[in-house]
Length: 231
Image (cartoon, rainbow, N blue to C red):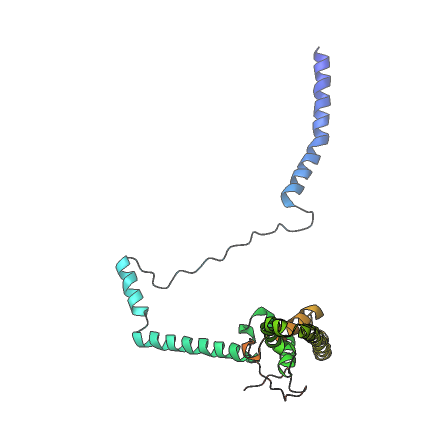
C-alpha cells in the first residue's frame, strides 16, 4: 500500500510540474492583454473647474448675483440688439436675400435652389394664371350651359388647352432649370426630380405669395440669375 501511494504521489507531482508553467503563462497573458502591447490607460473624465470665489452661504450667493446682474439700461440695449437682429433676419427671409440663406427653410437653402427660384421668378409662367382661368371657367360653366348649351364644348376645349399649355410650360421650365443648375454646379447633390418639383410648385403660386420673395424682374438676363445681390 505504501508503495502504491508513493507512486501515485510522484505521478501527481510530475503532472503539476507540467501544468504549472502553462497556467502561469496563460494567467500572465490574460492580465497583460496582447503580447508586446502596453496596457491601455483608462481615460479620465474632464471635471468642471469650480468658480474662483464660490459662495459659502445663500446670502453670499444673492450678493454675487446682484453684483453680476446687468443694469436696466444694459438689458434694454441687449433686447434692442436682439430685436434688430430678428427683424433683419425676417426681412432677409421675406425678401429672399441669399446672405440670410442659413435662416431659410431647408427646402430653400443652397445656391442651386436660389438659382432655381430666380429662373421661375424671371419669367411669366402659365401656372401663375392657372387658378384665375380655372376659377373663371368654373363660374361661367353653369350660366353658359343654361343659356347656350352648344358653348359647353368650347369651354371644355378651353380646359384642355389650359392644361396642355401648363404641361408644355412646365417641361420648358424644367429643361431650363436642368441646363442652368447642372451647368453651373456639375458636382451638385441635388436631384433632378426634387428641383423639377420645386420649380413647378413655385410656378403655380401667385407672384406676390411666393416665399422667399422674388428677387428678379421679368427683364432679368441669365447672367443675373443666381447672383448674390443686394436690393
